[in-house]
Length: 204
Image (cartoon, rainbow, N blue to C red; front, side):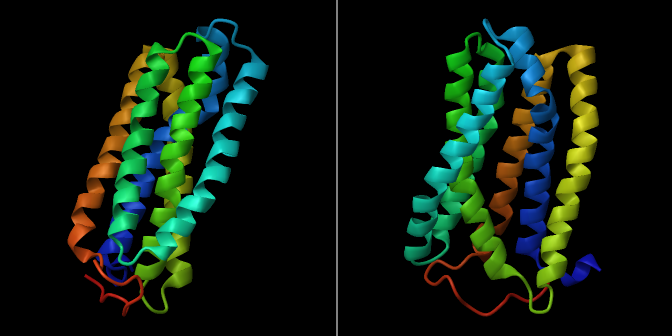
């Protein structure tokens, strides 16, 4: 079944799995971390931190996506994908040193900036490289991989935080994000340097 999916799609799904599995360990317990470890942290601070991420990402990613669409070739998408993913991957390390609410707001803003670059670029490359007659299957495969990863990560994140503390958890999330970024190196030669629309690749 998976043999019918080409190399680019496989790598993008695997990278997505690593990245979101990492963040899946943090998101369910981020509010607890803020309340326990941040000076003056409470449910309001946790809500604002989450809001900063979503509002910032939602606003910034629109002009970024427009720029990526207007630029020839896929190299801009590729570099936006790598740069954004890598930037977001270092944010959990910042949580280790955060002590005040504004630290969390700043880190969430940086995370939002990284994902505002990564998400449109990932979606653009993924969409262009889907094999003919594999559209629904490719998207559902990514969705299922993320669902399984998030489920396992949620359990693992709580267990790691309770057993070893938040610091090892944040380091692990950052490592998963870096692995996610490094996987993109596998598809660099499979992207088009000149045009964004071209025949669908054959399965590898």
